[in-house]
Image 1 (cartoon, rainbow, N blue to C red):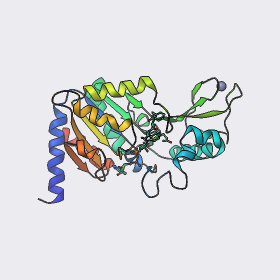
Image 2: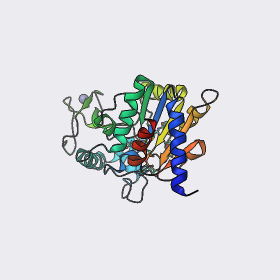
Image 3: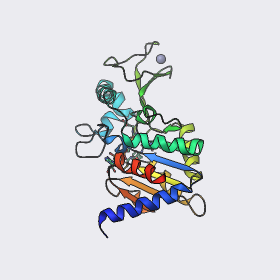
Image 4: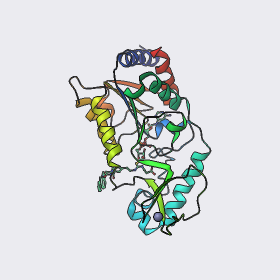
Length: 252
Ligand code: BV8
Ligand code: ZN
């Protein structure tokens, strides 16, 4: 059987399984935005290149050099302002249209592209580039992707930070709880475009797998196998911007 035949067989199995699913949960990572032109984190040209994670995505880095951190995030805001959702984002929106409120999209991405594609029930567990948070009065503001000053300040005078979950920081309690509930309750978990190395996000996969008896069917969509592959019942390997629309088409 050629690799193509194998892929078609896996796609068929995935569509049959999804077709009878009551509840669907999706976990996405940077890979789902790659075809929109947003760099992923751990590819060779990844975002972290040239920057140690500690320096640009941790509270200590921000304390040490807020200007470096804001330069890094303003550059990402400028990049995301020029990109559009791709066919993979639109396919996930089509899935939400099919399952309605029995469909939950959990994303590690902070680029806002799922909402831009029309997805409504999106749990942004790592925050969003669109929002800032005040380091003093804690006010959270949605600023879209308009350019911000080099070192943005709140109306209260204190320094703003991106409303993003950095390493060593806890995820927003309510959003994370909702993500765990969705993973617990789903019949199918689609894991799309994530290397599944960052926790606790990656733990949603074993949670779904072990939740009910039998646990959820885990379908992985990625270019390559990942840390989540060991839990995957079905692997669909190819660019998510091509694979997800095929899956929606196969669902009929
Ligand atoms: C926490 C916001 C409790 C930033 C992000 C040691 C010390 C301290 C902590 C830890 C430690 N060891 C472990 C930890 C926990 C740590 C962690 O998991 N570290 C990892 C690196 C080992 N986690 C945390 O710190 C979390 N908080 O644990 O709190 C706590 C509290 C205090 C002290 C300790 C613990 C917070 C984690 C959140 C960090 N913030 N994002 C920003 O975005 O600017 S994480 C960051 O990585 C992004 O959110 C990103 O989404 C996420 C995961 O990366 P991926 O999305 O998977 O992207 P990646 O590039 O890795 O992979 C892309 C994939 O796509 C690849 O598989 C590729 O093959 C595929 N792909 C590419 N193109 C395509 C494709 N697939 C399909 N189609 C394509 N076209
Ligand atoms: Zn303030």
